[in-house]
Image (cartoon, rainbow, N blue to C red):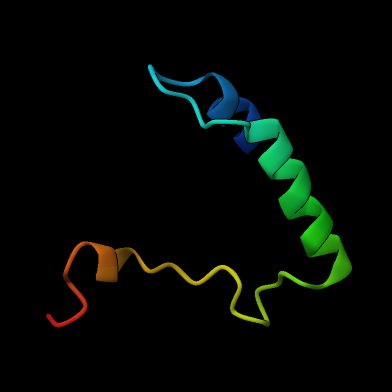
Length: 55
């Protein structure tokens, strides 16, 4: 996660806003068990955003 956040803080013309703060918050939630793969916390909704869910 640290490498991902470093890239998000610095990459491109519009890096992620408050990447470090957001990453720290996500890390705390994951450590506390509030976010996890088992809970479905990281399910992508990309297909829905792109209008491909019905295909």
